[in-house]
Length: 574
Image (spheres, one colour):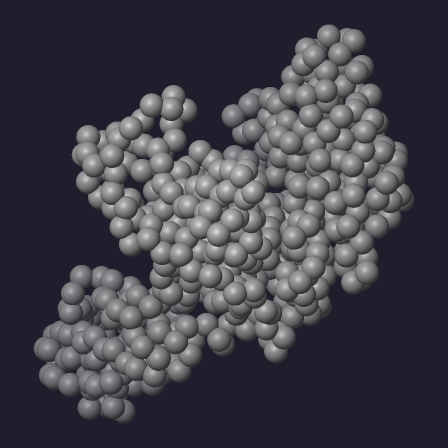
């Protein structure tokens, strides 16, 4: 392992017992240079929890940077139990250890720019850190995004960890990169309601005494004044208050440390200070997550209405949109933005922290490691297609969309809600476009694009007429998990009758993965007993592929197939 190089490292571990207990396994290095020995951890500390269930579990770290130099033969990679008590001496097995060198990435320069694709609708931004300011990450940033949000370097704990002592160097470098490339800059954030990444001094002694309320009010005002004046007009919008909502509370507000001291007035104080000290025209936002949840959305409406009714300055709301591959629905995302627009048409709305975990909501067990199934990436790509189609339709109500990151090599979801490898962003770990990117920019490149259904044959007699549906895939890639979800007939002409449809299996009828340019079929039997020859029907067969690639095959047919012009007429394959 060469210092400065990146490696993918994995092994499978099985605890030598089967008692249902849990053990923390840490993968670490021991390096010795000139007699000095270091023990850097490879897995996030303390390690990976492995159950003693008689099964193999993968410990996997993607893109580990070897930071330590060492004498020849002076580096060892090892596994150990690391409990907080220090006395877990359980035995375990290791198998299939793999260490592979990751070549420095180069970006694709012959694909469409994301932000240019949406130039007529809204700017598209990315959350960044200092590692995105040089090399291929900077190239990816400036090619595909025209707005930035600093992930952590503008937060209170980063710029003013000690009262009155300011550390702006990292954030200044990020702002400089954006300014030099003509990019917009969102400031994130001035006051975090939960107290996360906020120094303890900010809330004084934590009490709501009059004296401490004065201290905390002054702290908020001083911090906001310093930061917004430091960045000035380079920052066009600020998340002034971050994540203030809690639907379980009667006033919908989180009982964080600022609330404990000042009640809801801390929000007023922060927004008023931002308006007072920020340059004219700076947009002031509150920003929160899970706004697609009905209770949380209702709270957002309530809190904003209260602020507006009292004349507290507010220009916009941010919807974080940290989504999972199965939740929330696109319809609920649209509903959240529509609801806020209907209630507050004067306010801007932005999607501020967009990503999509490849794991289902609530699933803290699954881990694809470095073996993400192509079918999952295809599913994610089709869902991103629906996201951005919806965002286009909302462009008059939505003023910006920002991804929380750019590529899968750097995502907070690798550590949340558990430590595992996630793949939530448009580009993969080598900064290459993946189906998520193509779903956003050009869905004709998605696996399964061009999938079409048609009548392959129409045979039998009126009591046992057999209609075979054929699904033919396009040439882009596999149409994964293709299925016919139902098959129905609606009579539109003739004496009413009730034909009986018998599918080849219970619905959904599974056609499976259909390779590029290949086909699959399913046959349905229809009993037209009791229908006169002039009875006319609309056949509908909805289908799905890759979960989010959907359509409905529609066909007109007569009860008498000899009058049906060989099976009717294809009205739609949509």
